[in-house]
Length: 376
Image (cartoon, rainbow, N blue to C red; front, top):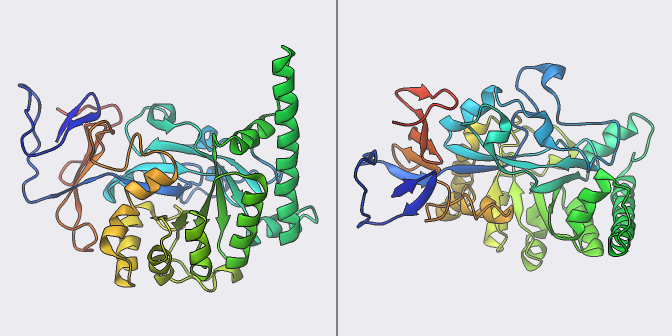
């Protein structure tokens, strides 16, 4: 495999290596693309920092579409270093699930920049939304809308109606050369309606998944189910409608009523039904370095092992529209490469070396490289 200027330019057994190019001998190793954590709160919900590091839920407004996770990421959170130990080189960072509409997500590399801006892959990937217990608990405690599941759905529905009206007025004004009074939240929702941004729907229980589908079909946006731990009950519906699921977290207790039917085997059931699946730790709910461990546990419970690897690489890339940059060892994609001591689904193997855009950022012997330090 040849990587030039951070991009894979050739893969095969007869690749010509230009003079002077550093060569990494991977004899005896498994060589895989960097894994993708498709639903993380990396850097916005810092481990062990309490309220000072909790910047993932702006609970003062149930409609937070104008908020951006990018503006709250601290790249010095320990989770970024931990991600390299698990072979994770890309993370999609999302707001939390306290609000019916939580804000915009961002795709970033897990290492390399002096600022988060230098690690951005895509500044806007999706808008995060939440159904189920979390928003109704947060606002119910305030005696404010929404305090019930039907209230949560109404908040989302009202917001999209306003976005439709906003888009119509905006387009009319632009056609007539008139100025437009901007609204950041409605602009983001209009981008969802236009298909520019994905709708990332937090939902665990099958009835909430049904509500999510109902809303998506009413307004015509592209939806991805996040969590879906009870989604096996409606796996055939999700498959028929081509709705992917970012499944997890798996190594957790049943802390809420809506996750009492969570089951690692549900991931295998979803995949068997034809649903495209990815795996999430929901970091820091499960530490990000255990992303591959969750896939291993799913294989133990019936998930096809090839699908398990796809759920860490090509699937999350395709689901979130990042497959033009990451997810495979293919010419034209970023040189995010991880050397493993063996099969990564075997819990006895470990990461040996990690390269992000062709630069070595971690080795088992040398640890994590300093930010900005180039591979020699």
